[in-house]
Length: 253
Figure (cartoon, helix red, strand yellow):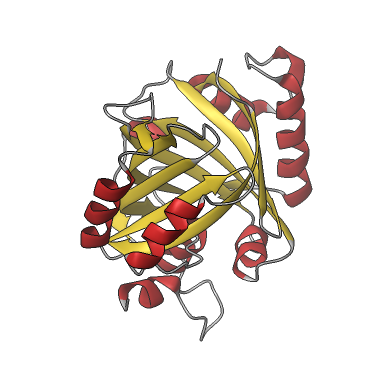
């Protein structure tokens, strides 16, 4: 059974391909590949939600102390009968809480189309309580499908510290047409293809050995919201003039 509730701290970095290769070599004694995918490598494709006023975008962009996102996620190629993960990701200051449930992709689409007509208890899901939370959030904000974000992930877990997780995301793409996850991972690159988003995820603090390696390789922490960066690329005309896009900042590193 997949874990449905997470609580952890996350640190994000934007690194080069050269830094990535050096990191992999130096952290290999401490890390093992994620059990999913091939050697911890797989593709992530997520359908993100927002409303007509882009409230979720602005809460994230303005770094409110408490903010949250709703997304429907699949891994690798899938079809309507494949497993999807419907999740709410909440962030309070530096602590991330994620609550998610598993359901067939076709059942997720059925919920999106008929949630006002079919009782929540009648959907096929691993956790009806999480579905209630998702439904409350979606209704409160009047959320609707906004865009699809996809990327190739290399995920590692700590050998001696099972709570340590490191992910490297590359080939980051987005689209706001064809919002069907079963149609695959494609779209426009929203971060320089030569850059990689590194995330260090821990329950408490980052191990000293990892801190030293990151410092030695000049890896600088950088807030890199995939959701915001994609929104700024796809919705340039809809957002206020003069807003500084993260794509430009990232590409200039």
